[in-house]
Amino acid sequence: MKKLSMILPLVLLLCFTFSCQKAEEVAEEHNVEELINVFGEKAMEMWNDGNLDVVEEIIAPEYVIYSDPGDPYEKQTLDHETYKKRVLETRTATPDIHFTSEDIIVKGDKLVNRWTMSGTNKQAGKQFSTTGLTIYHVVDGKLKGHWQNIDRLGLYQQLGFTLTPPKPPDTPEEKK
Amino acid sequence: MKNPTMILPLVMILCFMVGCQDKAAMAELEEFRAQAAVEEQNIELVKRYIDELGKGNAAIFEDLCAPEYSFYNPSDTPEPLSREDMMEFLKMIFAAFPDINWEIKKILAVEDRVIVWNVVTGTHEGEYMGIPATGNKVLVSSILMLRFQDGKIVEEREEANMLGLMQQLGMELKPKEKE
Image 1 (cartoon, helix red, strand yellow):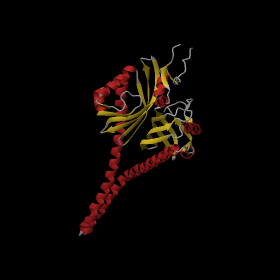
Image 2 (cartoon, chains in turn purple, yellow; image 1 turned 180 degrees about the horizontal axis):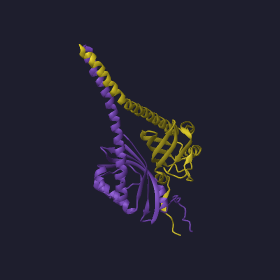
Image 3 (cartoon, chains in turn brown, cyan; image 1 turned 180 degrees about the vertical axis):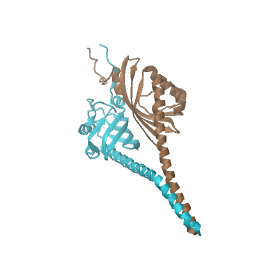
Image 4 (cartoon, each protein chain N blue to C red; image 1 turned 135 degrees about the horizontal axis):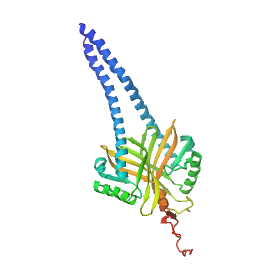
């Protein structure tokens, strides 16, 4: 008779544990989906439409550009004001800039975006289209920093730049 | 005296109901766990892939990459390299940078994908893309997105600091001369 009063709570505990585990996994999946949606929508609003109000919503107060060769703010920690400045500078250089996400995946505290960027560079007066891969560091639903590589070589070539070998030393300049 | 005999079937019904509802949940949980195991396995495969490339072993492509493998650098190029193209390309890379090494700084896996942030180093001791050996030491970052299918790599997309690499080899970026 006593056995039952011991077994019952154990059995109920067991059933409860299984349900709880499942709930945790489902909760995590919903967070991932939500993050992908928020990023896909709000980040695009910021970059494509220039809506800087979104910055407070999705960017952490201190944003670290861990690695982004070619970016003027590489290795810096940006506050919101500086972050907005960076967005504005990009949009001023290319007023019709448009980012498209080709692939967004999330795992733990990382969001990875594979993307295309296109527009008309004002200074060069040329249209371009280039690609990038970015790993974002996400904390409490906000972007806290990134590691990024962009096809800047392709970008510059489209803007009319070429790679030239250095002039060998002690060689007179060739006349055309 | 009657209570236990009444409670027992009630408890069994309760567990059965909870158990049945959670059968779907249990199946989903199993699926999550299986996926996590595959993700761990894919990470180990990518680590091995990069490790072997660092040893100059281009044959690893035949081991770890599917015959239909495609390599994209830049990440969306309309002209990806095939597995055979890559093996040829790597021969050139190994001759150009005999001490080439890819150091994994960050690696993560989601479903059928693995993402890597790498730092690539080497000494320019042989011709690279028409640039004669300079003896320069290079260091560039690279981000990879690999996709697996049936335990093999079917797709690899890379964005790397190619501009930086060229500049480290002495090339200069100049506006095109106006005619």
